[in-house]
Image (cartoon, rainbow, N blue to C red; front, side):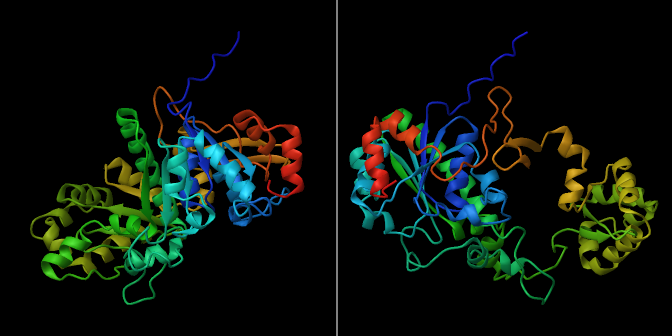
Length: 405
C-alpha cells in the first residue's frame, strides 16, 4: 500500500537566501527551511561558510556542526566582491522572500548589496541583519561573538561560583542560537505584515540584546533598589532549595522548590515531613533566611542515595527534580527517545549515519522535517542558477572560468 505523502509545510513557497556565516543568522534560515522554505546558502567559492570548519571534522572534511546546522539548504557559490557576482546575487534576491545576513554593518553596502540597494530590486524583501551590537550605536563597528554577547548582555557575570571567575553560561554559542530564534520570530512577523501590506522590511538583531532580554528582573531590580545580582553558583536567592545537588554515585540532580507546597512534597520524598512545618522551614522566607542549613540538609540526603534513587523518590512524591544529563545520559534517556529528539540521517558522502537534534517546535498538522544534512560547497550552484535565473550552460562555464562561482 503506498505511503501517504507528508503534509505540505507552512513555509512552502517561501524562498530564503542565507548569505551569513556560522550560527546566528544561519540558524534562523535553518528553522525556516525545516518548515518548508527553500533555503539557498550563498557562500564564497573558496572555503565557503566558516561553519564548515567549526567543530569535529568528518571524512568529507565538513564538520558535524555543519552537517547538522546547514540541514535542508542548497549551497550556491557566488563571489560578492566581483561585479558579476553582485549582479547574480541581485537577480536571486529579486526572486527571494527573505535574506539572512550577519556581516558587520556597512559590509554589504560596500559591495553594493545593502538594504537600500536590494529593496530597489525587491520591495517585498524581508532582510534579517544580525550583528554583535546592532546597526547603530557607538559599538556598531565592533566585532561580535556569542561569548562577548554573554559578557556584555549581563549573563556571563551571573554564571559561576560566588566570588569565582565568571564562566560561559551553557554553550559558547548560546547567544547565536537565541538570536537566530528571535530572528525567526522577526521574519515570521514581517511575513505577516507583508501579507497585509505588500511591504518588505529589515530586522535589526543584536547578539547582546538577545542575551540582555533573557535576564528576568535584573533591570527593574537595579533601577528600583540598586540591586546588583552576584554569582550564586548552582543556587538562587529567591527560592530554596533550588539548585544542583551531588548524589552518592558521583552524579547530580536538579531540585526546584519554588513554593512551600513543593518543599513539602520534597520533605515527603526525604521521609522528613517535619521539615515543612511552620516551626522549621515550611515558609519560603524562613528557608531563604536559613539557606545554608536547608541546602545542607538536602545535600546530605541526596549524597546518601544514587541519582536514580533520588529521582524515584522525588517522582513518587511529585517533587520537581531531574538529572543533570551529559550527552551520554541524553542518548540513554527514555524521554528523548519517546519524543524522537534524536534523529538518524544517512550521509552517504560521509560514509555513515549521522545523529542530530530533531526539529522543534512540534506542529500537530504541519510538522517540520529534516530532508538533507549540510550540503557540499557549491553542490547546488548550477541547479539554482539554471532553475531560478535561467542561466545557460555557456554562461555558467564562463562564470566558473572567472571564478565568480
